[in-house]
Amino acid sequence: MTDRNPLTGLPGNLSIQTILEDTVIRGGGIAAYVDIVDFKPFNDYYGFALGDSVIRRLGQILEESIPDFFAGHIGGDDFVCVGKGISFTTGIENARQRFRSIVPGFYTVRDRELGGIETFDREGSYRFLPMLDIAVVFTDPAEKGVTVESLARKAGRTKKLLKGEQIAEPVFPVLKQALESGYRVENTKALVEACGVLREEGAVAILAGILKGQYSWSLRKSAALALGYIGNTRCTELLLEALSDSNPHVRTRSVEGLVISMGRESGPLIVPMLNDESTWVRRAALRGIGYAGWHDGLSFLRVGATGNAPGAGINTSRERKAALDGISMLAPEGEAGFLVGLCDTAGYFPARGAFEALCSVGTDAAAREVIGRNGLIPGVLNLTGMSDSNLRKLEIIAIKSLGKDDMAITAALRFLEGFSLDFSQSTVSELRNCLGSFSGDRFRRLVILLDSRGLAADRSCIARVANRIDSGQQIGTSALSAFLGWVARRGGVSPGSLLMSFLRGDRRAVAASAALAVRSLAMRDLTQMKNGETVS
Image 1: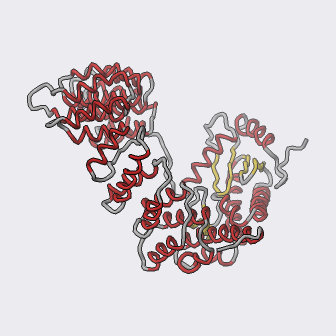
Image 2 (image 1 turned 180 degrees about the horizontal axis):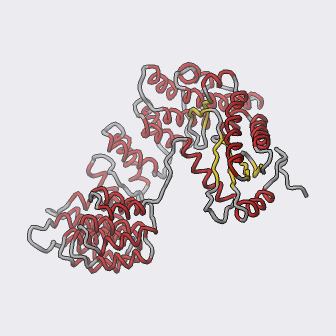
Image 3 (image 1 turned 90 degrees about the horizontal axis):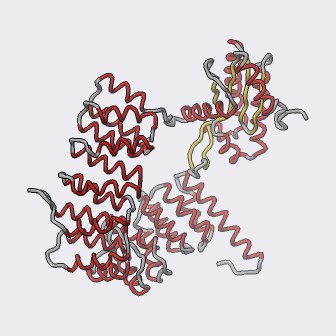
C-alpha cells in the first residue's frame, strides 16, 4: 500500500519516520516541523472545505519550495520536511513567505480589512485571531532520537511564542547560578519557591544544599516549603531531618512541607512537634493534623483547643485557634457536640474560632447556631446533616445576605450553590433581581447557579441586563457571554428580545454570543410550531 496522505498526496507517517531515521539520525540531515498557528478556529469559522484548501495549498508550497528534498504530511495541518544545507533551510523560509502572501486570498474582503477573524477560540472565548501563519522548528544538530512526537513538542513551544504566550523553562539552573553569584536573598527565595511551585525534581539536590548549608534561616525555610511541594522520597527524608533545625521558622516550614508531601501519613510524624518550644511550630503541627486528614489526631486537637499554651508571653488564643482550624479541616460530625460546648462556655476564647469550626463540621447544631445569631451566612458552612426545616431557614438568611457586602454575597452564593432542596419561588425571584446589580465573576456565578437548577430566563431578566448595558454599566464581557449561553440553553424569552441591546451592541463578543442564543431560541420556537404547539 502506498504511504500517501489522501488530502495532499504527500508521503505519510511511515515514510516520515523512515527518513528521519535514515537522513537525520544517521545521515546528519535536518528536519523541519511545519504547522499552522490557530488553524482550528479558522477551520470552524470558514468550514472544512476551505480549511482543506489551505492545507492542500501549504503542501504544494512546501513541495515546490524544496524540490530536491523531502516533504511529508503527518495529517491535519502538520507537515515534516527533511533535507540538508543552506538550500533546504532557505527553501523552508521561502515557503513560509509564500504561504503568508497567499493566505489573505482565503479570507473574505471584510476579514482581510480587519487583518483576521473574530471568533471563538478553543476555550470558548470570543477574540480576534490574526491571519494564518505557519510555525517552523528545525532539529538541533546535536539532537538524538528525533521523532515526530519530539518535533511536535518543539513546534508547540514555537506556536506559543508566536501567540505571545509564556514558555515554561526549568527554574533550578537559574537558582544554581543565583547561589553561585551571591544573588540578593529575597530574589533567591523567589527562585527557591518557584522550583517548588513547578515541582522541579531537578532542584532537590540544590534545595538540600540550602537546607543543610550555611544559608540564612529565611532561605532555608523557603527550601523546606519547596521540598514539600516536590514531595518525593528524598524530600521527605530532608524534611524529617529539618524538624531538628535550630531555627523555629525552618521547623515550622518543615512541618508544613511534610503535610503537603505526605498527607495523612505525616500525622504521626508531626505529633512530637506539639511539644516544640516554639508556638509557631506547635501551631503548624495543630493545623497540619487537620490539613493532613489524620483523624486519629482528633484527641490532640481537642486538647489543643482547650489547653493553655506553655511559656511566658505566648498567645493561648492563637494556639487554640490553630487546633480549631485542624478540627475544621477534618470536619467530623461527631465533634459538633464538643464545639457547641465551647460556644456555650462563658469566657471561652477564641469564641469566634469555635463558632467557625462548628460551621465547618455542620449538622443541625451548626444550623441552630447560625439561625440563633440571626446574622449572615458564614464564610464556611457545611450543610451535611442539616434537616430540611433548618435548610429552609438558612435559605431565608442567604437571600438577605445577597443585599449586603461583598463577603456576605460570596458566602450566600456558595451556600445556594450547595443547597440540596428546590429553591423557593421567593429565592428564584430574588436571584433574578440580582441580575440587575451583580457584575463580573459574581454575575457569572449567579447565571451558572440559575442554569444548574434548570431555571429559565424571563422578560424581566432580559430587561434588567439590557437596561444596564444601555446605561453604560460594566457587567463584563465573559459574564454577559455566560448570561446569553444560559438564555440559549434554557429559553424562556423570544429571539427578538435580544435584538436591540445585545445583537446590535458595540461589543462583538457579546453580539456573537447573542447570535448563537438567537439561533437556539428560534430553533426551539420553530420545533414547537412544527409540533403544533403555541409559541409565546
